[in-house]
Image (cartoon, rainbow, N blue to C red; front, side, top):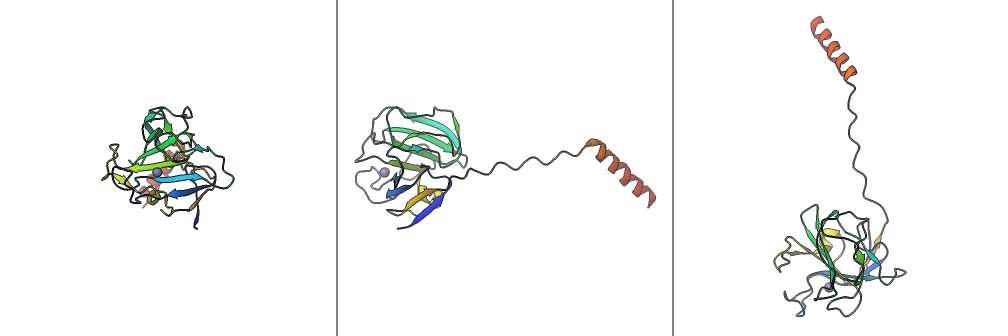
Length: 189
Ligand SMILES: [Zn+2]
């Protein structure tokens, strides 16, 4: 049983992959499992808060417990991939369409709304917002984790490194002096 630690897990605690992406499954229109399922693991609470796996913007929410995917939020990440967080607890959504989100923004709580057999996060990724069989991508590939049943995903708690500071603007006076000095040198030789 593999254990991986990442800083952009959807669960800021321990989670376990209970159903990998792409497993043949006639219960899905595509004929295979179009997402990857995460459940709480170890000491993680039953309905942990879910967080974005990528920085992005909320493009759709469903606040109702139906249909199949239940309470959900869709986030377009900064790389142009759409993410769908499904089956969340009714009433737990903490984001609205248009919200800018990062790895620390609570989305809602892992739940069991929609067509489910138990509480889990069904996480999907797609190249377009049409969520077609031909546009789904393997979320595990993007997250860099094994797409394997019973993989334990730990969260390392680190935050995204801040943007590097702007280079200091050289003082005009100094620059001016240097230009004068350079001119002097040029004149000399
Ligand atoms: Zn699923």
